[in-house]
Image (tube, rainbow, N blue to C red):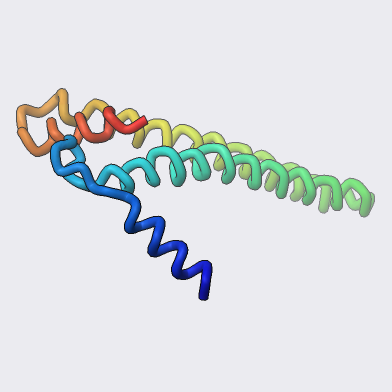
Amino acid sequence: MNNFMSFFQILDVIEANPDSACRGFDFVIRLIKNGLFPILQIGIPIILIVLGTLDLGKAVISSDDKAVKEAQSKLIKRCIYAILVFFIVTLINLLFSVVGGITGSQALTSWSECWNSIE
């Protein structure tokens, strides 16, 4: 119960700055940009490659040629998925950074300013 209360105390300390480009969503944007995206971009590819390597190691230890070939194909697929996840997150980040400058819409321009202002 004490941890639950401290979470609300942390949320009370976070003050929304209505003058910022994010209009009070600074914390959420910072959480996505500095928390979620790095986990997706770095963590998931590492997990995929490690799991593929473990599967290949098990197959090599079992000395079954068919299992080794299956594990190699799984490892290659997981490496491709890891690269795709890495670049999809990069592409989304780039898209969010550029989208306001391309269009003339005031809402999209302020979104781009908000996204680019958060470090």
